[in-house]
Image 1 (cartoon, rainbow, N blue to C red):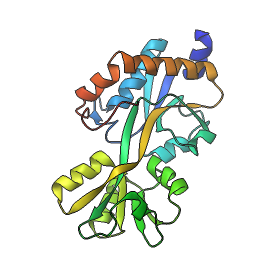
Image 2 (image 1 turned 135 degrees about the horizontal axis):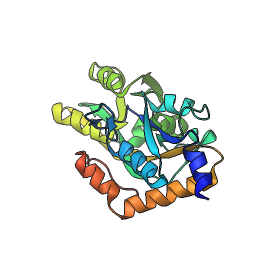
Image 3 (image 1 turned 90 degrees about the vertical axis):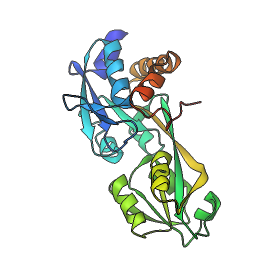
Length: 240
């Protein structure tokens, strides 16, 4: 069985782990050698260690590009959020972390809750092809969308006055509100991003091994310790 799992997760002798560099909570820095550092690289490296192979981290600028590379023999596992659209080409593990996604408005806005946002005439600014973009596209069909190629660009556009609300990860919105008290975060979150490990489709034994590993990393404190070590423990929550 282990040979089958190794052949699926490390077909070229090393486990190639795609890392979404745009998620500043899960990739929170760099190692001394310049490699991505954070919870997602930690999970990938631990998975490879348990499998008995080396781990090669392959950075992607965003989740959309990472998903586009599924099945192209570029990565063996991917750091990506669970979404039905992506499930057409990717098999997802159990989530190992959860990140709230909220809207933020400006002072004087009449948009006071999530229902208010899901109306015609409302323009939502957001990061294109993010997990919350995919979720909103399916669930908030009344508003229009102003999409940007990075979180930073979407934040800048909203700060410059574009759109009615900004959709983003809540920790980023909290930092914005701290700098600009005239911003108002709408609670509760409109969705929660469930971060997982993606596999190329059709490897059930490997998926079982990954799920067992994640369950153990959550139970033994590995994930919580990694969050604390990288200084994001107070910004994320473990999956319930």
